[in-house]
Picture (tube, rainbow, N blue to C red):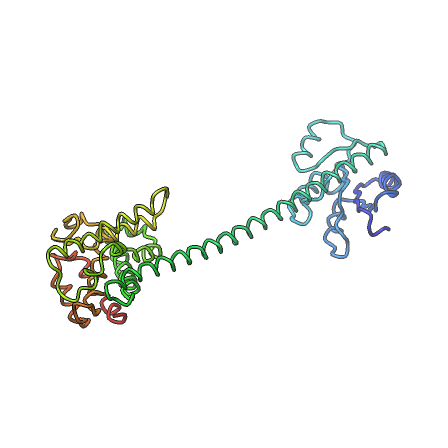
Length: 364
């Protein structure tokens, strides 16, 4: 059928060459003969005409020559992929090189051999088919990779969400052992995030704070008291003041927590989540003046994340009811933290805490 045959466009200003080409090729192809380069370009712009699969283009034509025409073809997204074979009576290698540089796939000398013409066309149509197949396969592969990446990202998100739920449940179970309802974890996360936003806005220690992954930090803060799992109930749930020996035992929860997190880190080459969690666990009971535990660090020797966690942790402890105490009001808690400025807490962080204390109050 004519419509199913491959379309070849033959462009030459010589009528004899057009008739010869039509005769040679018409048994196998649909041949569109065109007498000039400009008319070829006009025909390619007509929407009713289907695009040819190959163009046989004479080089030496009046008006626009073949070199000028191929530049226009290769500049257009609609025609740049159509293979072009130059037809020429020239026998200069420089002319052939110029044509190839402009994008022609081959040269055929005139007067052309019918067998050679058919063979060259068959070859270049086959190459064009293979090129399209490879392009289609590349598109399919790209789409597959994109879909695979989306699937992996979705699966990773699901796994991370599940891991976070497990960690939250474990942390709340630990906190529940000392008589809390588990809100301590959620509360301290909110308070900590408010302080982080204030620190970032104030450009406090910008080399560190500008690199924070805030959401990952907030998730990792859940493990700040995980070491309490190793403290016996008699101490955790004691309704009265702890003895000196009992308090010494209680303080070990920091080291137990760090040890627990380090065991999770074993074999993990790069786990910022656990690195952050270990900082929160290790340093949230250190005090600005060096009287905290377990290391007795002071000032900026205490990591910034630990100093921030100290404020969030103490505020929630003050405003929450415990077996050994009633809950303080927001105003009372703020006053106690302000009184700890420069002793228990980093003075600069207390100043930022005062700026965001309203958020603390909404959640307490």
